[in-house]
Image (spheres, rainbow, N blue to C red):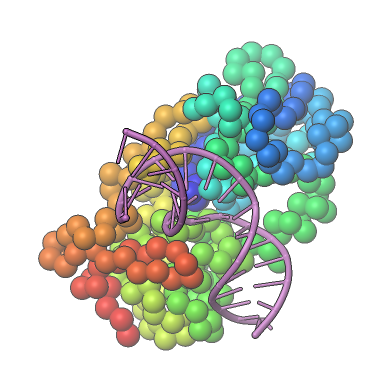
Length: 279
DNA sequence: CCCCAGTCCTGCGGGC
DNA sequence: TGCCCGCAGGACTGGG
């Protein structure tokens, strides 16, 4: 569930580790099927121990630790992964630990209940191959409305499905796609090639506003309680959701129609049929 | 090329 | 009450 706002909140939470030196990396004790860590842990350790974390960034829904030797550690939380400085929610789902030299906090933890997340160490070439412009579109907070239109306007896909395509634009996931299309007043099932010219700036502006607000509230912690910030605290944006997971409740904008749930590409989409007309 | 369905994995909640 | 199944939706793969 972590999308751009949750990953950005995690990134800010661990940014205090910038400049620190790695003294160990290890898989933690965990009886479950091990998560994907590449390369093998002994090679991972050999290449990363002794390196300084020069920069802690984000690419789409991934955390990137830039090391002094230009290698990068890329942490991908996927559905249930958390990046933590504090004690994890449970010990049994703790997957990976980076130990740092010097003062507290001394450990960067990766916790993942479902185990779909990954931790990878990339050379500059591997990084470009995996996360470069061929694989990932511009960041959702940076892309212009013209660039968004150019990347999507010829597609016959539904706009909501297209916004989840990380090659088109990076960072939007299932929750915020519904939220931003509600703010933009665009029906999620509208084919991209049938959107009107004014819809693209509306979608881009809503995307930036929704994502920024969600970051300000430190992301959304859903009822399953999985997402937490780096200190294992809940986010707050779930209290401001316009449509997501609110099926049958009145629309917060028109205060008239009820929020509807539809399924697109096997995923739930939420919308208000009055505020988001089809065309 | 474009797009969809299936897969990975776990925990929770609805239904019987 | 207890059990089982389906759903949650990140990214990737294979096939139409």
